[in-house]
Image 1 (cartoon, helix red, strand yellow):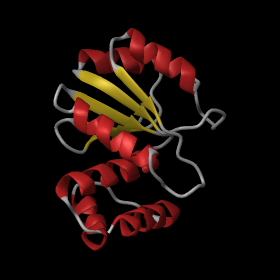
Image 2: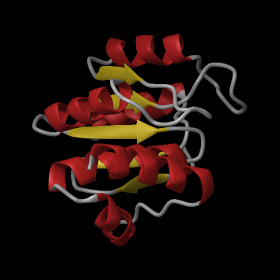
Image 3: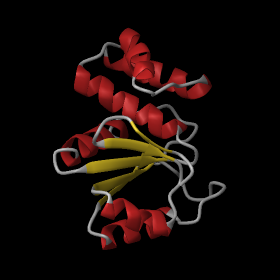
Image 4: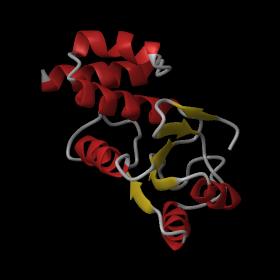
Length: 149
């Protein structure tokens, strides 16, 4: 991984991990991995299924929710948020995509839900926590949050 940034003491966002990174995560106290990539994306050393198999073999929980060009929607977003919320009681969770942008977006949604942030305040509070979004991702997050208000 080239990008690995703690957002809280229990939630980290990152770019694509390799198999060796997964073993290191286990040693660092991670108990779960959320993969936001879709099969066939560039720079993807492990398929979604291969990554899941390796994560589970390390006795960590694994969740795949492919985020692409479609709007962010439930049940996927809720499933990611619930997964993060449940596992952070046990240890650390890594949320990753190709370069970290989608990971920042989903963690922002999780933090907004956990903090009860309204759509208008979520982006500002998220940016203060290091969850800066640009372009289409920012629009997707805003649209999703407004649909829940």
